[in-house]
Length: 145
Image (cartoon, rainbow, N blue to C red; front, top):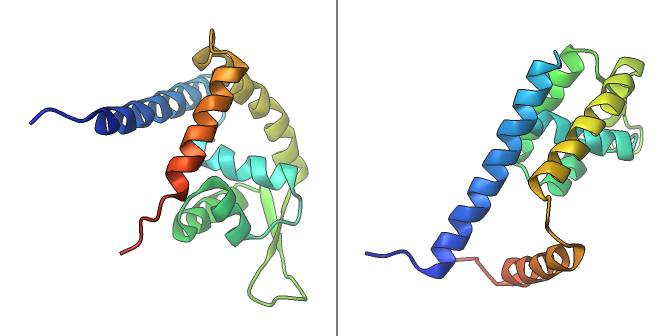
C-alpha cells in the first residue's frame, strides 16, 4: 500500500530531526564534549531561564518528564547543573547552571548554531515561517481518544 503524502511528510520530519541529532552528537564527540543533543536541549533551557523547574523544561522541549529527569540526573552528576530546593513548591526544584555548565554551554551553543545553519542552508526565513505556521495548525488538531 503506497504511503500518503501525510505519511511521507512525517517520515521526512523524522529524518530531518534524526540527521540534526546525529550531526550534533558527532561534532560534540569529535570536539571532546560528552553532551548529547537531548542533553543540550535541557542545558539550553536552563541557560536561558536560570531557576527553571523540570516540568517546564519537559514542556518546552516536548519530552516526557521521566526522560528529562534522567537527563537532569546525568547533568547534575557531571556538575553542569545544580538543583536548589524551591521553598514555594516543595516538589519542584529550581535548576541552575554551574560555572562549568555555563562554560560548556557557551561552547556548545556555537556548535548548535553552526549545525542548524548547515542543515538549513538555502532555506529562507519566509519558508521556515510557513512551515511553522502549518505545523502549528496540524498540532492544534484534536488527537485525543
